[in-house]
Length: 470
Image (tube, rainbow, N blue to C red; front, side):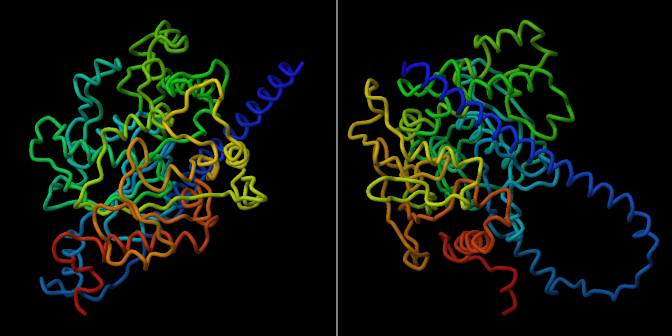
């Protein structure tokens, strides 16, 4: 008798989760469209008036020694800060004028926000990030492409966003969620000289890595969403991820240019468009015989505990790179039981998952993902990731780390150590909606950018534009 009730409860939870996620996705998409329409209307109404207004400007000092010229030069000399989005994320130029990082990129003079595949694997996204910065055609690697059944080459960047990138011109990276792991994989690729035609790459091309709710050790949410805890790679027959899979395949198959220009899941190199596969190609993908979900070359397997351990077994923490991590949580213990720490403080998209993850129990008939695994270690969470996963790389080997309660405790910073801080926030508190985080938003990103500019450097500290003439 318990079996039908359990099944009914699971189906009800699936329906509720599906509706909540669809509504949130529609809200984000419609907000972006409304913002673009408003901007287009504004430009249309005021374009002519702007050009009819004659203004007289005082001639500016254009001598090479002028303050503006000097400041501009110093801005160019600053190492870029690259903000890397997480799962279902987007970069500059997608979803119109909407910002994944809620406008945090405007806090510094030189910030890049690349648009990477929102559901592609950690490996593929790391390759895309390299060519976004250096320029050229994305090369996913011959062996990898053959194994997972997609084209070896992808998008072409006619001009890299930081083509001078090398050991003498390193970069600061800030990664949210899966974006943090993408940067770690990229750094390891640089150390391994994994990019054909670039034999001089090294781990020192990366000056610092800051993780914001970073997915270093996987998450139990992947199992709640539908990944099988037995292997961490296959999906349950009926689950939220199966619905997501069907939607993504149909979206990519229709291949509507203006829609994909607006938002792209990043699977173009799998050639799932109706123009290339026809109707039978769609059937093949839907039946699970072809495409990224069939081969496992997408992001969810990388976010299971097993997948993260497999990734981490090849990733190092390097002695000359600075590491800082903000781990988020929205749980607390009451009489020894982990529960959500707030109702109004947790986004509606995440509340059910915060509750479910806080009560997570690994199936007793399934082997644990690693030796010494305990359910209680994984109960604190932010609705998407477990807090234990976000502090620093832990499994299969724990990397050097130091817990800090305030930023002042880690000054001066020491390279080669993961400094981590635990913040009361859910997984999307510091992205998309700036007003929701309020003053905490500014405190968070101000501290990140200040650390990058004033505390992290290998040679002489750079001269900041506002300090050039002091």
